[in-house]
Length: 435
Ligand SMILES: [Fe+2]
Image 1 (tube, rainbow, N blue to C red):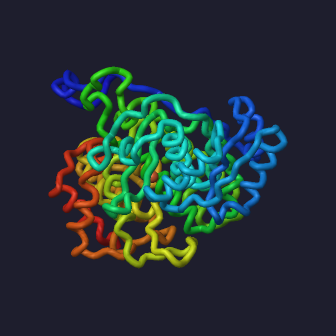
Image 2: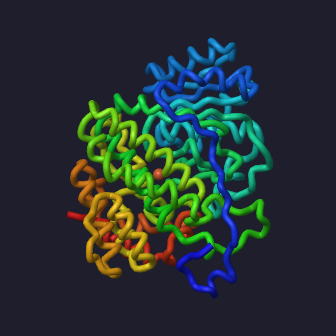
């Protein structure tokens, strides 16, 4: 299949790509299908995982009612921590073991879905905690085999965790975000009901939507799968396999939808069409990045979120400082895409156009800038933080931000440019402030 890279690179690279995805059900009211699906999967006693805020919502009540009506025994865990840690993953694992369940259902955002993946993994294949965690922080040991069925029900239109084999957490001892990445932990089924977005606060919709936007842009501009070294065996081909014709499809459509609906979805909770379409964009981008992988903006986001100082955004429970995932990503994105434009001007120009920019007569050497400027324009329209300074950092924090991100090789090595300490420093410096 044709691509833009050189023959020399092609000779050393992979020659095929995988198409992997959870089986997805998308549509209004589909949370009520949970019971039938659980029964179809052969689950008799299910572990329902959620967080304390969601625990009393109608979303959880609908799922429980559906499971109960189908005759599935429900064991509840309402204590998932938002922004999970190694400790909270292990607490959820203890529940999973003690409850003796034969399947899981997660109802919540990325934190809940990721926690369920980890609890499912460690309760099925017990091991010392760092065993399956990404190297070099963890052992990077491959998951030894299938885990129990997991039905993921996202309640925000962002993370795409329902479509991926990635579980992210804070490793408290190192004050670093890291994760577990394996196709084996990808949820078995995803139930995506767009009506769950109708009651979300505007700032939550905005942060989630920018996470989606960056998933699509990063997957679309990632190193092409042809230039990733071929895996030692076909079965070890990674999920972060680089941009490929399958992931491109989802990225293109997600970016077009976001260009039309992102600002509308944030501006008005009454705009049901916009909120539902952003949920569909999140699904498409989730499938795409689950098959291509993100790159630098997400790699840089880990330390931006992990080293949080006093930032407390509107729309999140007060008390604990937090840089929500979507914000920790999007503060980096304009800086990265300004730099990567030269590597593939057409892709950057097309992405800018799909997001609403006028790209008429934009020369190749300005394609990164025009995409960067379009993202910044959308950030301004939706009151996103103005770069790293907007979430509480200053230039003196950059060495620590760089140290925190350098171990994220799975993400950084998926970028179309070589990212070392100097390049990361340059990227963070350019991300300090955008307007
Ligand atoms: Fe993300």
